[in-house]
Each structure stands twice: as C-alpha cells, then as structure tokens.
Length: 243
Image 1 (cartoon, rainbow, N blue to C red):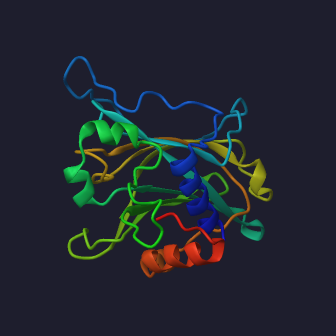
Image 2: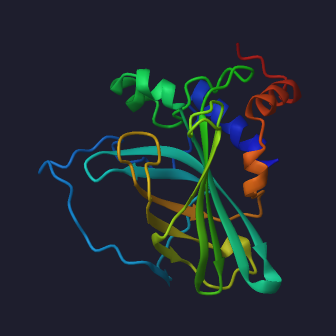
C-alpha cells in the first residue's frame, strides 16, 4: 500500500537522513520584517501552464500565516476516472499532536521540519496528526478541495478526526486531460477557513504535486483509520525493530 510506503520512507528519512535532494526547501521560519500581515485580493483561479516543470512525488508543503513560514514533507497520490475525465489528487503529510507542539521548543521544531512527528521511529508508539489534502478536478473545473485530519489523540473537539472544505484556491496544472495520471502535475495555493495546526493562524498552504497511479484514501477510510494498529503491523511486516 502506498500509505505503508509513505510511512516506511519517512521512517528511513528520520533515522538515516535520506531525504530526496532534488530541491532544498526555503528556510523553514521566515518573518515579515514590516511586522504586519499584508492584505491581498485572493481570487480563485484554475488554469493550464505549459511552462510548468514536473517535480517528484515527494515534495514540501509550505505553511504560513503571512509572518512565519514552515515546510513539511508530503507525498502525492492520484486516482483517475478516465471515462469521466476526473482525477483525485491527494497529498499526505504529518505533524506532531497539539500536546507535543505545545511543549516543543522552537529550535526543536526547526530541526524537525522534514517530518514534524517526533515518535515516528517508534512504530509501536506513534504520536501525531496525519493530514490528507484532497483535490478533485473534472475537465477545467475544481469539483472540491478538502483537508482531512486524523490524529492519534482526540484533539479536534474531543474526536480524532476533522474535515475542512476549502473555498479559496489558486491551482495551475499541466493539462486538463486526466487520462494519463503521470502527465498531471502542477502547483497550488490555498486559504484555509481555520488553522492547519502547526502554529498560530497558519491558514496559507502552498505546494506542488506530481501524479502517479497510487492509492487515494477516501474520507470514510481516513476517519476509521486505526493509526497505532497500522504502525504496529508495519513493524511486524517489515521486520523493523527501532526501539
């Protein structure tokens, strides 16, 4: 399963530092020197750009509140519906639980920006929030954009799952014909209705995507996902003993 592959690669990244070196992310913390939040007219847009350069499946999502920016690693999977010319693009990433974020020093957060999940190396003792950004496109239209969050803790008003629909977006894509998933790539900028969850008022997301024919998780599947059991099974199936 692609999710298992994602988890396994993140584990290796944490332990051995084997991060893809295609492109270094910008410094993960930046400050607006003027000391105020800039205002701008953010208009929805979805367009083709033939000058786009295809990136790899693994890339960084930039999270910002206009004054501060951080970058976290993500993986992209896509599912095409050739008959209806529809494609689902899903970027998956992970950050620490809110309890961990509240107790981490700022310096630790900076060092840990690649993964943002402190205990990922201990597969039978995992803590974290997993984020699934799901973009559904049909022809030249954006059908939906949703952000699903699944945590090992009940930190979303007493439950471990949260769902957010996104209305403000700018998306640029390589083509509107989705019959070949590997030909679909692009970039996006989103404005969230509420915080992403890494730091205060982090409602701006920017990133790139490059499609494959991987596994896309549906809302119901994410909501019912037993994270700790999945990590325990991964530990057994791969023979990893990282404790």
